[in-house]
Image (tube, rainbow, N blue to C red; front, side, top):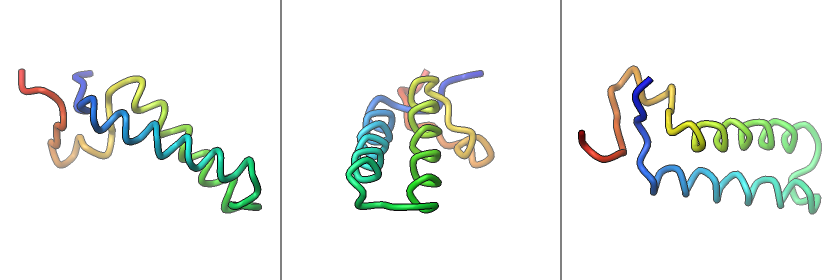
Length: 67
């Protein structure tokens, strides 16, 4: 698969994921909502590591460098 995420997009996703996990760990985001958001944070980190966002594919969005 061709990467479709740029470095800025990847960094923003990782920062958001870290913030959500910290808020959950400190109890600011409790319960089921917290678990759902932490799970979504894991997905954000995974897509950042891979550099591929499945949501970008149908609309042919590419935030990375043009090749």
